[in-house]
Length: 211
Image (cartoon, rainbow, N blue to C red):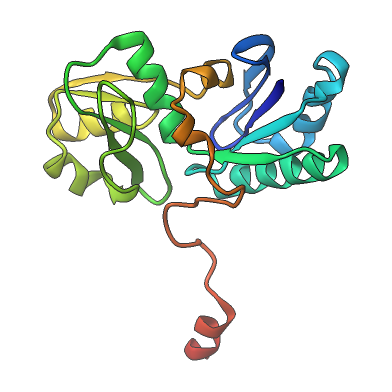
């Protein structure tokens, strides 16, 4: 069975095509902005246009815009191809990579850059890479006081370690070629955005209340 894995939730645009557990094609680049313009051409450049029997997409947390772009594209392709679609968490994919490449001895945190001076973070079990705490979005200053693990993984690790003045930061980025590292329970999220915090824009009702 072929699986197309899509990730646009962070600064990277990462794609992988799997045949069962084997990655047969991949394309990853750090784009920052511009996911919308580059995503579909990148998929089309994969073997057979990326056509797969199932699709997996990163539903977040991450960039609000990036998450929406990936989910929308995945939904459109799943509908056009008539194939199943599942979501997975960006933090879980990083955690699976940490388990495989670093073999942490105890529960470990994955921390990625959020917005407005906050970090998305979650704790994971060392033996399964399954989440042991809920997803949270916390101000860097507050997290620097409460998260005391010596080693921190993810794109937000340097900012956190700098803020608290101790520990080791290991910047593990999203790479869909590592999708096979994930526990199957982490691959079955609904294909709906997992933003991790409230939207930046104020709802219309809130704006009316300020008028």
